[in-house]
Length: 388
Image 1: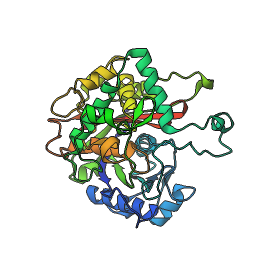
Image 2 (image 1 turned 30 degrees about the vertical axis):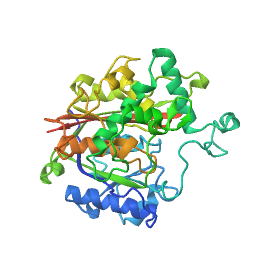
Image 3 (image 1 turned 90 degrees about the horizontal axis):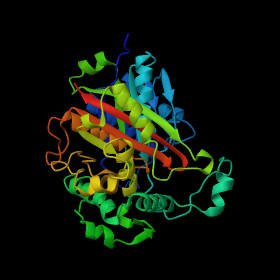
């Protein structure tokens, strides 16, 4: 007998991009209340709570206490920016197993207010972290790592900086319609190429924004979803994986999307060609290109050509993508993009995206993204959602 599906009944993206006057706990709470209001539910309805490493304190337990939740299920899975897409899978499984009926997932953070570096400072890790003795002496930076991936992709497949720039151009075309987006100015390929070099292979406009804020989602049992009189968005397929260093023998042009995407498509019973809209994590332009290939939207090595043909632009291309402006232009709260990818996919399926970027007859959407960094404890998660 098939297990009952879970439905995304509430979704909320915090409108702020700079919150020096708010605590992280307050941002979590405001996001939770926003998603509950969207669903037509209250805190008293929540019996499952999911939060990752952005939770204030050592465990989501403290945030649950702050919200005065009465829980049957608690999940603190931490895998970086994709944690919230993993939480969708875990919440759906808990709901199917009748361990909870109404699940809340929250994200919040204040990296902009706290003056976090743009990815050019050496990564700070814990002295107890397993790979730290081997990594720290080389003083790795986030931008430096992704710069290496970009250069390797260029070397293997002939990808160009001009092609990568089209990812940013596409994001800016969408962000101009989002009143909350941090960067709303439409840019050209020439603008991207003229922006300062951050490291070899990466320019400033190849990088995502740094923002405060957050987001939240509510998942429920089918009968509850149908009683709320909200558009029905069903979790049709999920997949997640760990794509580790492999003892130092990494493939610098492939991501965990090869595994997570295949699993999600198989569970949903669809193929990449069935997807009408895609939210794909865009911390750097090269990461979008690699994931497009690994998810099967174009052949390996052809991602640069695919984006340069305008395929990501809503109303123009074959695969409308990140229609809120994504992490490159709109929002990257707590430097964790999985939640906002889920939220925009839900908006598209409900027909609630901005009219200028709303995909016509959008009935199948995907949200996917990495956590941590390729080649250094990299996770990846994919969720396929359908409108009923």
